[in-house]
Image (cartoon, rainbow, N blue to C red):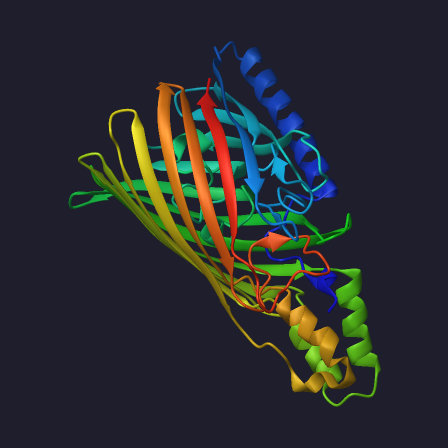
Length: 423
């Protein structure tokens, strides 16, 4: 079965063209802002800070890699132990231009789709607060689907070594470009925060077992609501976009379906194609902290018209603080829904089946962790993840070996020691 059809749904990165345009826009915006305010004689308040994670992960599998987000390789088949899975370093500059206007720039270096640690601009936004309740953000901003979306790369702010991939892998992008409106208010005992905006994202997709990359683009809009009181936070969000994906292998298959004399072949190719495909994203999360106990749970759903299967993810985390120590556990599940085959494919049935199977990521995991606050700016964490892919599923792995047993996959262990810090 040809496994190179699949982007696997979680290997995204900003394309080079989009990145170059973004860097140009950022430089021009920053220069224009500094010139404008320096000429007006207004003092600019500056804040410079940073964050990072130094980690080492070891994965028990020798027939597949464990990766996160856009990484094309990780611990496992490529190398048993790997320091690049979670390691990251970021700096953030905030410029206070006036009482109501400021500019934020964040640059992060972590392993990317090109197998290096080249720094990437993950945030570059102009923020205007016309009233105490209203904020407008223009530029590059955090993707906002889940509880930890705003600080997703700041592992120091999270209870885990990494956010559960079963849920957070549904939205692999850390950032999105566009315009966002934030409105703060109250409802009874709850503080409310509405986030709404229009966005554009351009990615590169890393092919499994290959150095090839393919582009994905999405234009859309979203609306999220966050409710928070003293101990509890609830977040509900929905996003809609039109998504396009291009791959030489996939396009060749669609061309064959359309050109050959197969009943309904052209219609099947059109049904499977991801070209301005309607995409729906839904997220629901809750976090509660009281008397040194922590409880968190999130659910996510993503649907893309075309050959991608509908994706669902959920997790539950429970932790208990004992002074500077906190043991915790997380039970997570990813499952998919969609056809495994299509009778319209004729003699191209094996190729179509492989394409449909490429976005099946059904898997379960159990994480047991222990964190220790070393200082107010550093936390040491150890986490052991037991991972079990479903039968005939890619799981959350990548770079499967030719002898990988998809029909009866083994369970595997991932061990990670990390130091999260801020400065």
